[in-house]
Image (tube, rainbow over all chains, first blue to last red; front, side, top):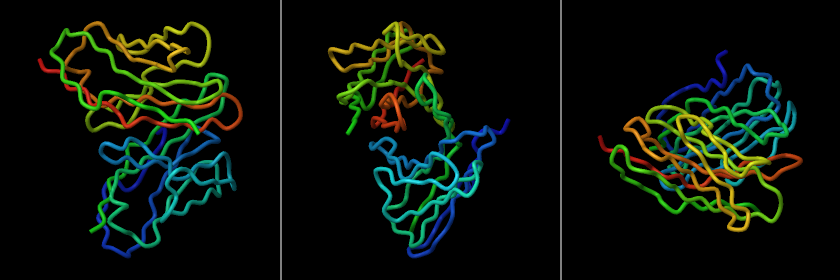
Length: 114
Length: 114
């Protein structure tokens, strides 16, 4: 199994450009998430989805948009890139259960906005 | 809202030393607790988790954590660290029941010196 796959791994954007970070999972997980990781700040939840067609904001949604048209895919869109969006982005997925959420993470996308 | 506090941001230990990383959470209800680890160049992976039962939880690679409800704590321990334990460690909490949003602490970087 591939698990959670993110593309691209690295990207440099100019201020004002737009891009889409791709995330796909092959585990048939209902829940998917986008986190950003900044040094000394831990992981902050940007958006999450509990199933196809359902998305909701996390802690830091401003400047981002998501969609969830299929169970497998959960792309994250940056419309007008800003230096504050320089970060490492992680997509994750999980399946709800009594044992609590075990998150499966992708390998991350390192984004620089210059 | 739930939150997680990790006390040690950067820890340096010699091989064979004992490790304890502090984690406290704030949430008024029943929680699930997690420790995730991120080895250099790799994505986050689950180290161990607590959701019910024995408050002493054993995870992979000899790690364990103890849930102390009265102290709202979930400290991570290992009796004897190895160089390969060099990584960043994240404590996380989610509420039990319903959608279990996971909130992460800011992480602790552990450096083990041979």
